[in-house]
Image (cartoon, rainbow over all chains, first blue to last red; front, side, top):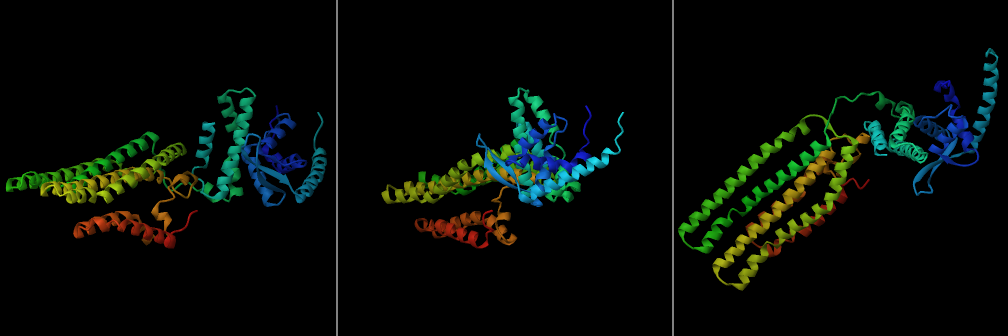
Length: 110
Length: 328
């Protein structure tokens, strides 16, 4: 299977995380697991990558965090998307359309 | 799960001890724990689960910017501290606490040596008995000095911990920390017993004096007083010695790194604002004990001198509030 290069995808980690936070707050492992599931295990986000993305987005005001106890009583850090997070996500989606169109011109069909 | 915890601890060991780093460590542990439990639930063996979790962890370099620790990450430690194993740490604590027990016995001999002549002359009141008592006195002093010298030479083998850079890993730190915490109540109890014995030393002599059976019996009461004090001081010295050994081990790691999280917070050097105050306060209780014994022996007013203890307690509290740094 072709391994995805983490350098290429780095710019879109935020987009994936914000997409998964769109409907409801979530926590580290759940997001990591859903990324793996949605991409059929083609992309697995590393824990340190995920954590640094959370912290960066929190600093930029795209997400906020809070503590909540899970079913088994364990305390977890949950992340929640903010309004500016939503508009950032929209702009990243537009950016991706353009990027995809640009790169598409240079992909040769076999 | 212990393997994963230790892996994470060792990854973070040399990072600065700041709230941001703590949060990162906690949250990464949450994620790893979640992943581990999920893998175990899906029927993986423990080894497989641990392998996957560690493989998916990523690279700490990615956190450098987020945590503001890029500088610390690129900095190699300025020395290579050697690792002290858990076995060695245990051996050190065992030998040091045994050592302080023996020093305690030596001090017991010093304090009780003058009971020699008191006891012999109480039994037979003549010159020969006085002579024998004096011989016993010097024998006890000699034995005490012998024990002190022997123990100092024996314990000097651990001086390398002070002279060379040593560190302990997270596993050892946690184990020693837990042991020192569970020793805390024993130590508090022993300290109380020691102080009670010292304060009660006057009881046999006053009771026997009150009964007034004979002069000989009354002076045996005086001898008993020395044994009360001696045993009390011995208990205090050996309890204190074991606690100090725990603290010495836990203080090996630098407090500025995550590995130093177990450095005792109640270390006097960190508790007071000025180093002078810390230096004075580190010998506060020893000074009070000496003062108490000196004043009591000079005045022989044991019925009143115990008042030194509550007063010393209040003064200690005052100094702590005035010069202390406050709880963190």
